[in-house]
Length: 468
Image (cartoon, rainbow, N blue to C red):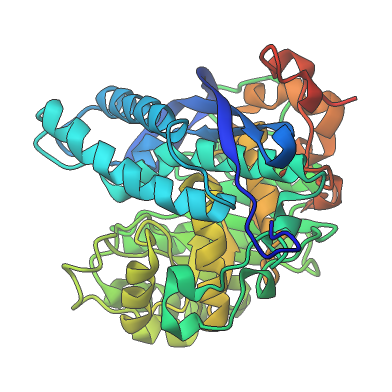
């Protein structure tokens, strides 16, 4: 915040609590050839002190989706999770020692630099034989980044997203994004209030039964167990399909069958599909062949394709021969795993990508800056999930609700790990038990990141964040 004398106010973190807890999945999820059955959640609680010794608490949580952030070929899934957890601890230790500065965006971006240094040190000390990827580093920072945004909003008794104005953030975007953004400000691209609702993107995983005929052993926990049942129970309109990227016949057949089920469930509904090949396609030709076959078999399925996500391998710097220009002329094609900074965004644009996927697990600060850059370039924007549960999903939904042009939000935790949402039911049941196919983001209007906490989840000293 800037005072009347135009001198930025200073803040400091005076307390930081670092916790983790884990949950088993209701059913496994398969993507990119990997099957995930449980999740570890990182929680960071901070107390921020501002001018006049005024203090406020904030909390950030994030699911440690290491199978996505670091699909190592040499380390086991358990080893990767332990390493990323250790990095979370080191990042937390350094965060409380850092000069906070004047705004969470600036702190978050400086924390990312420190975290990359710590990741390099950790990899060398553990003799890993491979670097800790930038995605895993961003994941390790994300809960701290969310916590400081939450606390900053609370210290000023307003939404964290309302704190992106020049009153609080004097720097223009060129401070982080370069001269092309001179004179442009983050508040030009971020809304201070959330939209009322967003359609929910429901995940159709590679192992998920589409109809009763696909069911093996039933879970019998009262929740839907097939795509048909989910559509009927929640009146869904947006479906995200996990595809193989290596078996064209299966990918086409799966998509056509999902389209058939959607049509049978409600032909006049505004259906939208997103396709996630999890980086497995060998080249652009595979995607073009897929799209052309879908168009020949079902024009309605083709028209319902809203966007295609990250078809080929994430390392764009070493595979600049794999472009997406032809795909991008047919449908929006977005980067997800490839998006780790402005440089990768610019490379993706050069290669033909026309959109980006934002994720709260990459940090609120980073996501807002990338959203501003993408909107400046006129790119397609979406907000995606990391099977987020509880607070991590509410953070993701709040992020999506404050970025204009976002048309839907993912929520996978309610399918695969509902136990992680159960304690939130009393205060935010409509966010986790969907009606009418939409997420009621109008509920996310509290100060801070937009929501209050169940008392049972709050450590001592953080009771002020409890839902009344």
